[in-house]
Image (cartoon, rainbow, N blue to C red):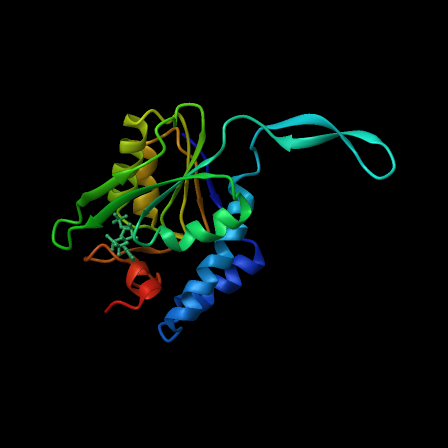
Length: 209
Ligand code: PRP
Ligand code: URA
């Protein structure tokens, strides 16, 4: 089974705690998610391929490391995935970007797809999937399955919060896809919400509801 990495850096944990507070306003929530995405992005890109090229500094020539291979693809699971996307793009501005529109049916908790547009040459690219919440994991499981259908082979999943149930389900469904998260919370409630969690990530990010 692929790894689950909990990014327990103090800056991540501090920012996440503020996001969890129910009275944290939308603008602050959005700003913090953007900041955390930089820190998660740093972790999840730690093994990008590097090649050496000769450069000239003001003093001498030297072999210097540069990113190599095909450009990274970032896939945002709409809506809330977009809250992680901007920061990741600040970190890797040349990344290609895809979007998968999914919403969770509130009664069945099944993920329903309404949009799919991804770069058409995913086979050789490292692919990073973005969604702040891994609750039942139905959405992430469906999104990764679609990305695999589209040819992706080197996939990682980045979220902000996960449930133990979601992590287990995701790993069963996609044992080859490592997960990066800022925290694994206690459990899911009867409505499929992460507890203690932070509520509905999309609503908090965009001020709906
Ligand atoms: C939320 C969240 C995830 C999903 C997680 O999206 O952003 O995509 O729920 O739940 P799951 O692991 O049980 O599938 P939601 O369906 O509320 O859509 P939204 O992002 O458009 O608000
Ligand atoms: N989606 C969210 O936004 N929050 C949860 O706790 C579960 C699913």
